[in-house]
Image (cartoon, rainbow, N blue to C red):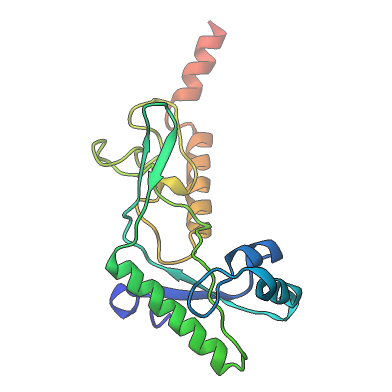
Length: 192
């Protein structure tokens, strides 16, 4: 975890792993970062079972934007700033150095991917700056609760799976305890 802090690099090595064969083939790049294609890619995919890799997670600064366009379609935009680009480059360099030091004959990068989408329905007390309250209920739509990674206010510097499970468990407990009063009102209305 030497590089986890923003000032120390802003990335971690999460696991020694490799993608599934299809993900491997789609994301594999040459040493210059150019996507593999043709006979070289074909040869590397045939030798897939002999590869290993390092999964690095890079801290971003949440520069993405999501919106609904005039045709009611969801749209999004994201670009990496200079700090994020340097963090990614440092993570790639570190992973390459480790793999080569461990005896790899060649260290190939892959393109970037995101598997732990976070944000979009920020949790907070201020409706002007957040979508849901501390109980994950929408500020604008009563009885609408959000129980996934979208309530995390910004990307985490670690795998967010346990945090997402904890938030969902917390929400389930809140709903089961009935502290919100919604179930009693529904039961009273049904009895009348």
